[in-house]
Image: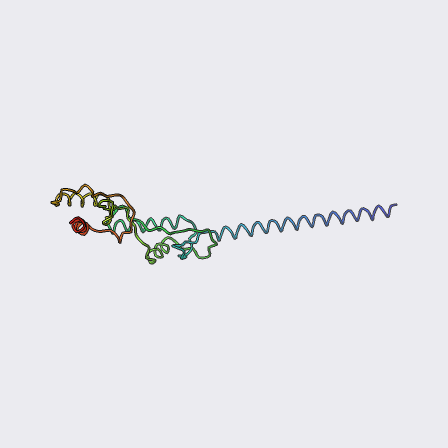
Length: 187
C-alpha cells in the first residue's frame, strides 16, 4: 500500500504542476494580448480628413483640424475685412489608424492649398421674389435698396426686399454692381 500511495501522490503533484503551468501560460498570453492592443490603439488612433471625398491627410485628434480651420477663418476675416466669412462645407473626419499625422501648421498649409470654397453669411436682394444678386452682409443689401429708392424716379419700389442667405463669396456683388443690377432690372 505504501508504494501505491507514493505513486498516487506523485500523480497528483504532477497534475498540480501541469495545472499551474497552464494557468500561468494563459495568464501571460492574456496580459500580452491586452498590452499589445493597448499600445497599438494608443499610438495609431486619429482621424483621416476628407473634403468632398478626397483625403487630405491624417490628424491625431479633431482639435488639430478645428484649430487649423479657425486659424484660416481668422486670417480670411482680417484679409477680406468681413466678420461673417467661413470655409465651405464638405469636410468629414473619420476615425483611422494614423502613422504620420499632420501638425497644426501642416494642416493649415494643406487646407490652404486645396482651393476650398469660401462662404459668407450675406444677403440676397430680391425684386418681387426674384433674386437679383447677393451681397456680403444684410446691412450692405439694405443700404443698396435704400440708395436705389432715393435715386429712383419709379415710385413703386415696394417689391424690393432682402433676405439673409449663406452664399459663396465669389457670387457676391459690391455696392455699385448691385445698384446697377437693380437699375437694369427695374427699368
